[in-house]
Length: 428
RNA sequence: GGUGGGGUUCCCGAGUGGCCAAAGGGGGCAGACUGUAAAUCUGCUAGCUAUGCUUUCGGAGGUUCGAAUCCUCCCCCCACCA
Image (cartoon, rainbow, N blue to C red; front, side, top):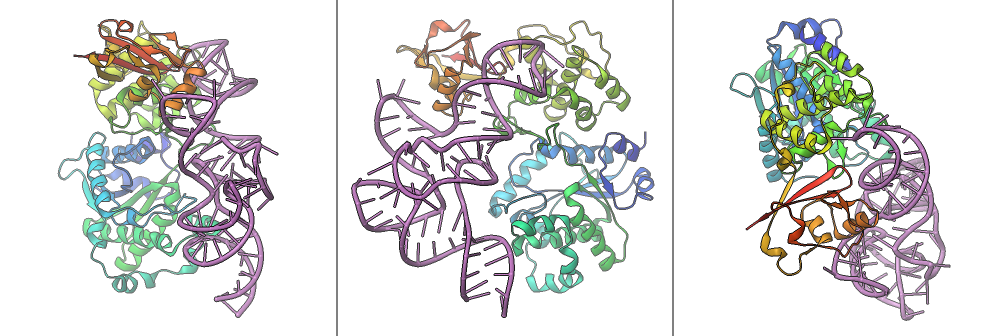
């Protein structure tokens, strides 16, 4: 299947600036295109994944992606799609975050020399003089027109600082620089980026007399119209120090029935006809579809090994959806065989055995220390509400303590609700 | 610059001296039901080894036995006018 149709079929395309020519240009390959990321955190989260997957598909068709980290623009803060202004970050923090994000992207796209280009717009904005920018770029923009941009109109209600208002010019200038320096002719972005992308295309035309194109992607919402990718402790991060591989797997595994097909299209690279078939499965079988989704998505982010372990750990706990392998799939999940008690791969908290010496450890403390609960008040609430378990036994006394005799083979299972687990392991 | 209206907990939004850790809704968590789903119903939703104590209503002071509420100064936002 050609690149454009692949994107279309998988629903990556919300709008294009040129429906007539873009498919052909994209399919031909050899284009340089860019996608921007704001390095506002030191890890990507699943909310960033849609553009990441889009880059992957377009790269696979022989195009060269430029990954732009907005080292400079993050210092300004894009108002698009935001109700409120964002806090301004320090330059050091931004640089640190940019490096971390680059590392994570390597899991999803080919980052070898010549296959992808990494740039930081601080490199050209860093030393720019305000007057020069105004003279070179500023006079080419009409405020009247900028005010008609959706992203600006939205914020006109609640207030928009001049700093943020400039964001559109900065992003447009990025496009111009990349077009000039790397012959970049495409920009991909979220649907809220439309105004910024179009501004960039205009700027490229005015300053370089070159043609450029843009594609926007839909904003991901769940069935309830909420923003995708938030859960228990906020965002689902790609950094396993922030979100364990098991929890990452579980995030996908717990998707709603009605969303599985959509998510498979976006976040896995399984063939689209297979996805259609898997998405149609009903009642119990749909759970196999969810396993496949979770496995494939986890495999992309953390590798086959880690994904297999998370899968087996989850199944050890909740059971296999398709134990006999009746449902066909091209996913490598089918070659993952359960051999032993993979329950060892549940998120684990290690604690010195000596800590249990004097009458054990208070249950509330153990739940917070292991990261199952955010605070001891939180843990107390959980216990009062009947959601705390030790080795599958509900704990109803918030004063309870855990002693060494609660451990079997140096390990114990602590649960907050049915799905949040922490394996506590004694070490000597 | 002027006039008026605002800034409340994760979000929206009530609260104009003690009954306020602060109504209601949303979101989130847990329980029941299930399929690790959705819907529904129920409970919880600042922190603390906790019948109490500590921090929280834009910021800093002040009045008071007692302040989200009253006073002073400051910061920020919105609307209109100039």
